Length: 150
Image (tube, rainbow, N blue to C red; front, side):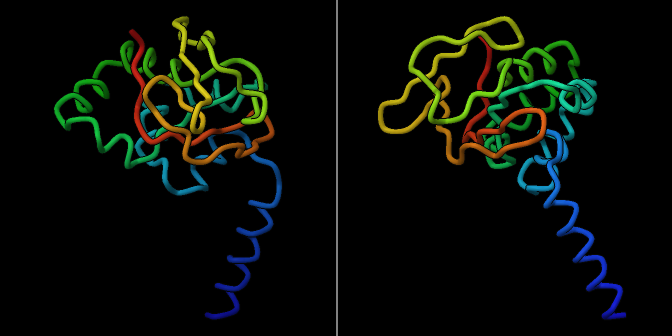
């Protein structure tokens, strides 16, 4: 029994040592279950597993928990609105934290995100709490709130 646990742990370590796409990287982190479920509902998993590169401002499960349950349920039930919100969190290209400049940047959704760098990187009203999680098709920056297109 112990041998199989060790083998499973080594297999997991080997898998995480290899570069993974943005979706697999987020799932492996364990704090993006709501985001992963939302991506699946919106039909965006294959897109974010694609060539990219993408920069994703990824809200954690705790960030999604800040959204009132009735609003989150309504969002998850409306595929078009969910897709708009999720693609608002994605910027084309691979932008590392050191390359972020204050100002407006166009999201994949089409609206502009406002980035600020005073006192840490902010995306609209969300704080980047962990930056530069590299995936083989882009980069993830973890944010503490869900941002919504205007």
